[in-house]
Length: 270
Image (cartoon, rainbow, N blue to C red; front, side, top):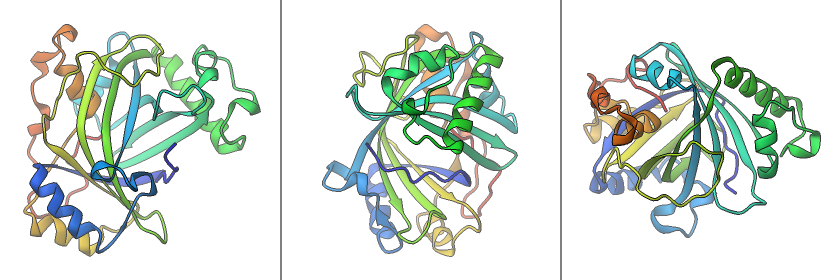
């Protein structure tokens, strides 16, 4: 299971790359950060990430992102492999104006169905039986109940991550092979049958920082002439599945971005 290096409050800037750019940026990153321990010895230094997104019957959180609501959230159940003994994480990802807030509580995989049916977990059901984890699970259940959320989609990708060895102020990720399929049942199978590929062969670069935007990140953006954009994996993946009837949404990723100048207000988050 990947180690937990969660930044609970942060800013996120996203950029779309070709693979050649991503490899060049990797060389830039290792001068400032170290590879996430979960990527050691793996192709592209990447580990798999899987999320089961929950939403209302009318896809309330989907439309909140598409419409660019300033204050919004997503509900997802994150897992990393097929093992029945590995934990999963109930995650709330909020956007409040320009800031991203995350809460997550780790739980045993065999307890998820019971919890999503509204039953509070026992201490032995939690990965860490502390107040923070319990509060995250409680808030997740409250939001899910408020919109009647249920499983809607399975999103998967390979993540190459870089972290600051001294603190959690900066984290950089490169996400490849993003795939989305409809999944309306609570299932933690990692395999997919016929997923949409919303970003094709492109790589999503995310710069995540908790306070001031580091000067070296600014240098990276300017040196590679990057254009800030949105990259909502759940939403764009759903829009790319014909059965959802959401193709009319279009490619809302191509909203005006920022080239060479940093803005924390124009990137869709997922």
